[in-house]
Image 1 (cartoon, rainbow, N blue to C red):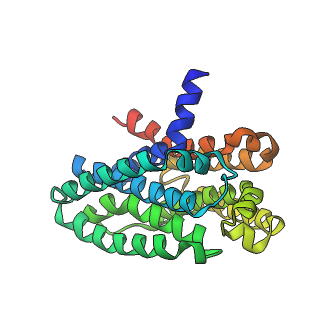
Image 2 (cartoon, rainbow, N blue to C red):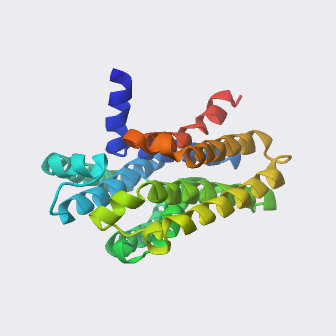
Image 3 (cartoon, rainbow, N blue to C red):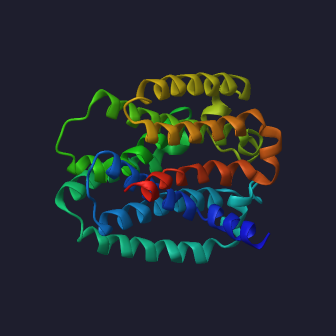
Amino acid sequence: MGVLRFYRYINILSIDVAIGAIVNALFFAQLFNVHILLPGIASLGLAVWIIYTTDHLRDAKRLKEEAATERHRFHQRHFKIILRLLYVAMLVELVLIFFLRKPVFYGGLWLSGGVVIYILINRWLRFFKEITGALLYSCGVMLPALSFRQASLTSADQLMIVQFVLIALINLILFSWMDYESDLKDRHRSLITHVSKAWGSVILIVLFMVTALCHLKTMYVHQAATLIFISMTFILLILFLFHRYFKKEERFRFIGDAIFFLPAIALFTHS
């Protein structure tokens, strides 16, 4: 129980999301046969944590009453200390920027512009919130590998990227679908609060089907990587099908975020 509780705090603070981004950046670097350096990986993980934490702190500050979700309640109660940690993280990120190689640095500048715009306007994005979030997260994860890939991407490579974006999108929409009632209570906007929970189910089913078709297309080219993506998709499908169980104590949240650790299997088994 102690380990589970510890991981719950890791999840509440979005540390697991940052680690997952690092794991997947290394995964794509291996898939595309690219070598990436420690400063780029560290900068990515820290940037992801900064973005998520900024978003959570802003939501926590906006609420006048106690938040409906444990994550936002935690950020409300520990607002000042998390804010100080955020300032420290920003300072470290600023230092890391000077150690980035030029392709990553310039690519990061463009991506940072998109992130800033997203943070400023995401409460008005409605159904674009999850789409924009999935695209920005995926671009950040793949930026180090794509910045140094010499050969052009094959159609199978492009489909692997599409699959990852779809998995990230399903993850975000599924979370919004699970959080529908608490989002209404806290007045958070999302795709699901905009279209209704019933239509959200339809959207998720369609996304699962499209992702499955992509898996079939890449199975014979990137078999090991595709099997990992299939596992990630299958876990999200289980969360969706048995949502009543996984909604209790927000189990879906730390399981749904933990799926992004699965590509580490490819890193450890790669010879």
